Image (cartoon, rainbow over all chains, first blue to last red; front, side, top):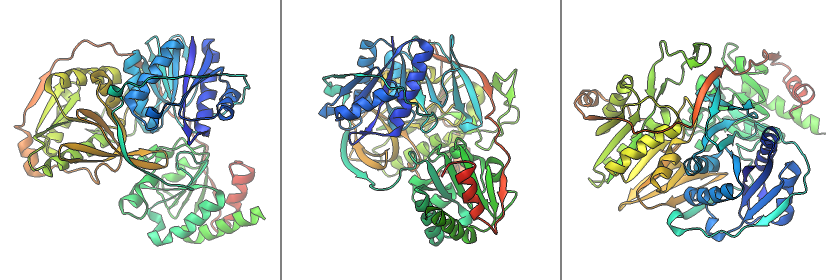
Length: 322
Length: 249
């Protein structure tokens, strides 16, 4: 029996996300009295693979097959399902990000395994296997029993603390044959932004709403964000107006994020916005309206005009760095 | 060419969620039910594709797994412009159960493009679309923020970590869509509402399927500490608190 964790790399490097996943899998293995097997797809060198052992992986299976360069949900699910069967996996741990959402449902059908999606804590108990999961866009959390023999848990990004429990993991390079009939995604073009802090990965996010009044006012917000090493985000009206790109929209129908610190500037805090950010560890609000609902979600607030406050915040961070 | 749009019936997104019966279920008193926001965008895009296809896309069908009480939501989808609807007459037990029911219908009726929203705003499962594809053993493309059909070939934009890819897969396939797929949901016009009354809604009985999960209880999110206000005349104090008290910068 084992807990199988699907890790993701970025041009051969693991991100924090993968260490969270392995730490979580280690926690589940502790509850179920099993070991952790990590699966990596892509070209990752041995030094990098070994890192997974630092977070509790007992065994690492590395698959670097050219046919798996791009994500095909059917091909990936078929490869991972084979590994899960060989490893006698009782629980699969996968990220609740775009890749995980593409693969987990297919694995669920292949393995007849119920999914606990978007978990942020270890299971409540293992008999019956009960997980704590986000529902109603964060307005309620469900206790969900998974009745199948194999369970799939998809972990919300940034929601589980990394813990180092060094293990001398064994590495196995696995050659797989990918059946062309299940690998039909053709990628014509790839556009990647480089050098930008990705919203889903960011520890700190600075976000602007309609209260910023004009796209011309974003300079000071961006300056504040870069002084903190933060990613920038925005509310829905701002992206709908075209003031900021759509991929910055955080909220129910945009990105759902859980940074350590979310700073909402000129955002009133409608339910739909809070649905995307309520898992942030700390929320700071800057708004002219003292009755704005964002202050009910925030731990720190300033009632004031963003245009006046922002330059002073930038100065304060600069002072700090001196 | 035929498009199928899967729709879920969810509480209006501004609903204040209350629990009933020992916190084991949601109190549905006074809830306004709507088409799941992502499904509404899928439907909108499907209709745009049909309008632009010069007759190549013959129909846009919506499918829903739910009891008769969800008919108003199905009628709304027809009013927005879907040609017809299928309702599988069963309470949705879990995503596996729902996907199994939809897959069974697709096996009989043959669709070229199946659109699903990335998640439903109630269970946030993000599972039904991929499961339908696996039951049918056909391709699925996830995180789709754009789709066009050119000479019968679907070209999709999918979001990846820090970027986008342009991808194609052969039909039939499932596209799991997210924000960006359509600009604004299409609104039902009066003519559409009138026409919807006479559009066909086929009711089919479910096949036998075993749900794999069950929600046994709900709880509210942990309450947050009250907001600590910093004087607007002294914003630097905020930075000091974030550094020394919250320790997050």
